[in-house]
Length: 183
Image (cartoon, rainbow, N blue to C red; front, side, top):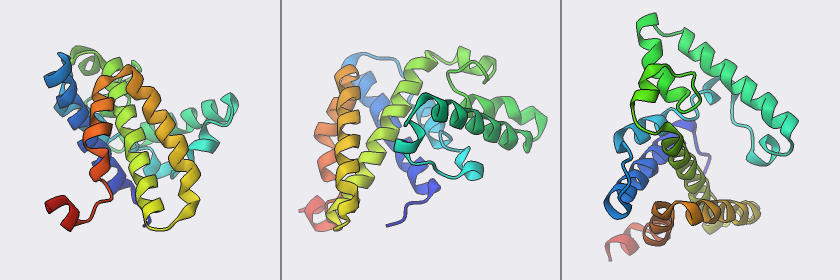
């Protein structure tokens, strides 16, 4: 199944929201769950211009990674430039959350560094779900990627207990049939 950017961002937003709610309810954290969902919804907006670069290529070495970050930043700036000036600051806080480029709203809305980690965790979980789904559909090419994604999610889960809870309680149902979910 060829996933599009809208599907991925929506799934990541729902997962980020769930992680924030779990963190708040079970672990006494103070995430802004709605903001987590919005940041996640826009987290790959630059890919409208750049397209998606496979993770193994993006993180192959520091030079490629830094170059890609610069390309992403340029794409985000181009997207923001298409908006009316009075709206740019608001949307910039979603694109640039946590890195100081988003303006005063990002700093005023809680600890953006933790929120950004939560969104990155949601993104990794979404990638793992994609791999699980593809492998269950018979696409053996995703087996290695599933192992890599699972290891990345487990590493984050060691630091963020809300991720561990999500993986334990919700991940098994992804890929289930409707009959299995309702049975």
